[in-house]
Structures are given as structure tokens and as C-alpha cells.
Image 1 (cartoon, rainbow, N blue to C red):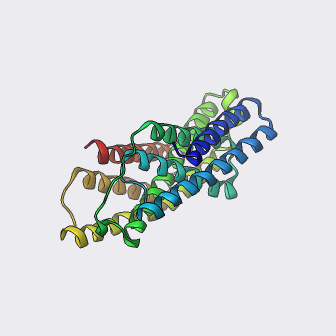
Image 2: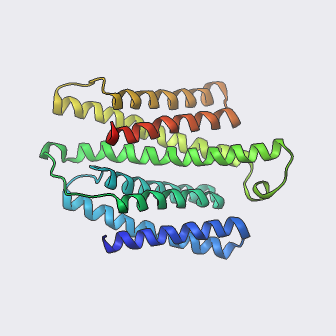
Length: 262
């Protein structure tokens, strides 16, 4: 295993433990340590991704090992950017373990060298893959926020001011952050699909082949488009929006793995 990838994994694991400790004990120094570890892990991970990109000449998503690693990197990166605005400290207790799970699974999967046709190397494909990965990361965080929203909403509805109620932020903040993730992720998903369709035409001469992955990608786009339409045009908020966000990510998750298992 690459030294920097091992360091990335170690930082993510330690950060996950730190965030869980913060949720349990609500001590700000624990949170600060967890955040620093996540940043260190992310910077090491960025170095790993950059080396893979310049060495291979393409975005590292050619097998499940590379894709899970890149997805974990993107989730952490999007989370750290969103923290600049929302500073939703408790969310790290879900984001860090998700990134950890991605890189740990990636580390035990084989990563054979893959020779790809030069036609698949280029800036256009980098934009296509990069925007899809970042869009998926934003949707993953929206999914985690939706889970927190439903937990907090149930606690308020049941009038149980227990463990989660005291530690989770207001429903309004959770809803606002979830919406921001969707607003960030949807244009990237759209751009990724459009560039993918154009790229397919350039390479194969066909825009659409009715492949199951293409169909699921289209369904994913429609689910998130419908959710955003309902939020913007009808004023959907709260529980319904959270449930639709979870549904959209379930379809996205299925599409993600069908690429390798289908």
C-alpha cells in the first residue's frame, strides 16, 4: 500500500473516532483535533489522487479500488468546503466514517494496472468524470444530512429531548444545508451526463445505447430534478424533501455499483 494512502486511511480512521468522541462528550477540543486530522488526511489523499492522475493520464476511476478512493476524497473535500458556511460540526461523525469506509474497502481491493485507449485520456473526459464524482459526493452529504433531519424531526415530534435532540442542530439549518448540497450537486450531475453523452458520440458514434447504467443515470437525474422542482416551485421542505433526497441517493448508489457489477 502507498505510504500516503496508508497515512490517509489512518487520519480518516482517527478523525472518525474523534468526531464520535465529540458527539458523545461535546468537547470542542476533541472536535478541533478531529477536524485537523480530517484536513491532514484530505491533503494526503489529494496528493495520492494527483499522482495517480499524472502517472496514468486520466482520472483514477477505472476500477472499484480507484473509484471508491476518489469518491471518499470527494466526499471529504465537499464536506470541508460546506463547513466554511454551515460549520455543522456533528455531521463529521457521519462524513468521516463514510470516507473511512470507502478508503478501507479500496485498500483491500485489487488495483491492477489498467491500460486504456488514448481516446479515453483527455481534458473532456476529466471534466466528465470529475463533475460526476463531485456531484455524487454532494448528493452523499445531502443524504447524510437528510438522515440527521429525520432523526431530529422524530425527536421533536415525539417530544423526546434526549441524546440526539441536544446534539443535532435546528431543522431549519439541516434543511438549508441539504438544499445547498442539492443545488451544488445537480448542476454537476447534469454537466457530467451531458459531457458523457457528447463523449459517447465522439467515441462510439452514438449518443445513447439504452444501457442499464445510462437508464439508471437518467432516472437519478429525473429524481433530483423533480426534488429541486418541488422545492423551488411548490415550496417543498422538511420531511418530504429529506425522504426524496434519500430515495435519490438510493438510485445513485445502485447506479454506482452497477458500473462494476452489471
